[in-house]
Length: 344
Image (cartoon, rainbow, N blue to C red; front, top):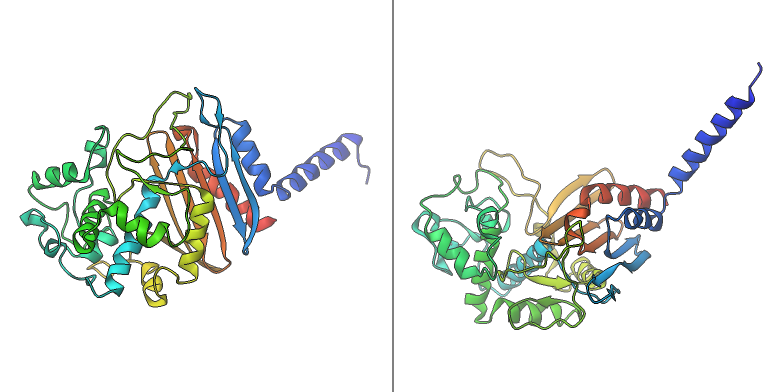
C-alpha cells in the first residue's frame, strides 16, 4: 500500500499533537492561562505529597506596579467556610455545643428560624435565605446587617432538612454562635485556634482595622479596580495564601485541629428528610471517585476567585487564588489541572 507524503505529514502532525496533549504539565496549563490573560495570582499544586508547582504570576497592585509573590494575601471568599466549620467542630469537641442543638439557643433568630439546627447551618439544609444576591453589593456590610435583614423576612425558603440550598446567611449565623460561645470575636477565635497554631503567617480575618502589608487588590477582567469591600465573617472575610492553605490542608489530614471522628463527619454528605443525600458536608463539597474521596470548595466575590481542591486518598491538592476576578474560568482551570496531575 502506497503512503503519500501528505498522509505522512498529517500523521506526524496528529502524533505531535497527541504527544503535546500527553505532556501537558501543571506548569504548562498555568502558563497557558496566564498568557491568555485569564490568570494572575498564586498557585500551589501538590501530587502525592510532593509539590509540583508553587509560584505567583502578575501584579498584586497594578497601579503601583507591585508584583504578586508567594506571600501575597488574597481574599479567599467562601473558602473561609471551612474555617468556620472547623471552629464549630472544635467547640463541639470541647462539649460547648451539639450539632443538633437549635441555633436559636446561642443566637437571637427570627421566630420562623427558631428550630433550625447547627448541623443544618453547617450543611446548607437550613432553609434560611441566602443574602448574597440582595445585599453583597453594599459596602461595609456586617453580620448584624445580614441578621437584621433576616429578621425582616417572614419564613424559611423550605422546611429545614428537606433540601440543600447554599446559604451564606447560615454561615454568618455560625460566626455569631462561635462568638457567643467563646466570648471572643470571630477574628480572635479563628486567629487563636487555627491561624496562630498552624503558623499561617499570611492569613488574616479581615475587619476595618486589619492591616495587610502584602495584600492583593481585586480587579475585573479589564484590569479595572474591583476590590473586596464588605465586612461579614463566617461566610467569608479571610485573606490567605496557597502556602498557608496547604498548611491548613495538612493539619486537617493529620487531625491536628479536629479529631478523626469529626474529620470523617465533616466529609460526610448531608442526608435529607426524603432519604436522599446532598454533596456537601461541613464546609466542603464532597465527591466519591473511583480512586477515593475528593473534597473541594470554590469562592468568589468582586475581583477575587479562589479554588481549594483536595484528593484525600493521594495527599494531592490544587490551590489557586486570583485577583483577576471574572477573567478566571475557574471550573475549566480545575478540569485541566486535574487532568495534568493525573497524567504527569
